Length: 412
Image 1 (cartoon, rainbow, N blue to C red):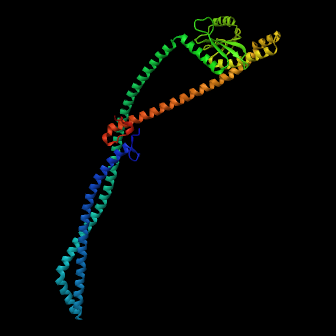
Image 2 (image 1 turned 90 degrees about the horizontal axis):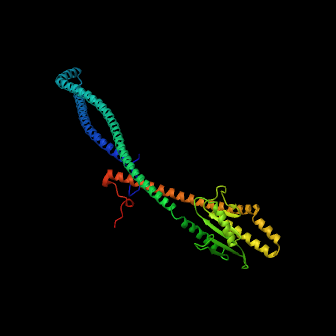
Image 3 (image 1 turned 120 degrees about the vertical axis):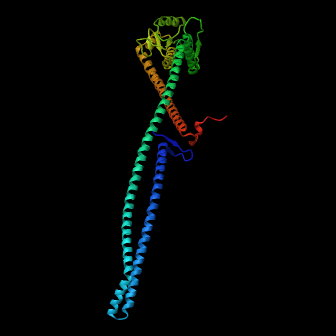
């Protein structure tokens, strides 16, 4: 699980774990660097002393050689070999003590040189040990830091899991409560007045007919009066009545076959040309719009296309009747055609096309609504998780984490 925060100034993401590990590493590094500086200073002092001793020995040796050479040269100027030997013997005798002392000094300086070399070897060994110690310290610090980070991450993960579990349970409780309320509301809605549902569909049918056919006369059957719901008197462009379409609206869960006989009787009583039964539940053996015992049966979506076809048929029949008046056999033919399977199939095909268009439109509406709802939930989940993570880090780091204005309560 990554624990990051965002800098409010430069918007750069900062890993909290890296910041903690860097701090521990810096502390260990400073500690060992301080020790190394002390050791380096001790070694530097020793090296300085050794260099000074070597320089003193070299200068003494050079001075002695120069003195001897000068004295020998001075004695040789006399030109006497014996004198030279005598002088050399005397010089050696006189300087024997000095030479012995110098030899002792040289021996001592040799010891010091050897000691200095040993110190240099020891210094190299200490440097290697120091490098090994630094490496070991870094390794130990890294391991300790890794273990600490594992512990911290485990604690944070456990804390996040606990908080998320409680929040999920709270959300689930709210969701269950909302579902229960929705079910109650749904049951109440389903138990509403069937009469009210029927009246809504009746009004929708009448409003659509009035808006679609402004020149036709739409007559409403008053409540309480005997008969169906509404009658459409079809009027052509010459103002002549060409027939009537009788509409009955049913909005129940189950289709009742007794509706057919009653509706047919109402059609005869009103002397209507065609009867259309608009229902929300189709007969068992009729999955879609069709004709049953001389009555057209369709759903609310199908009735719009069917109404257009039936009205056009009445206009054509009225036109043929006007042209061939007093020709009863032609009227019989037209009536036979209107009630034939061919006419029924053509009407059904037209209405099927209209229904498919309506179904595709409804599917597109539902798909878009589902997509928008999904995106809305994704946005809510991202915002919620970001707010919870920032709150957890804020609770751990305290005031060292800058506030984010969008996540704070608005001031009055």
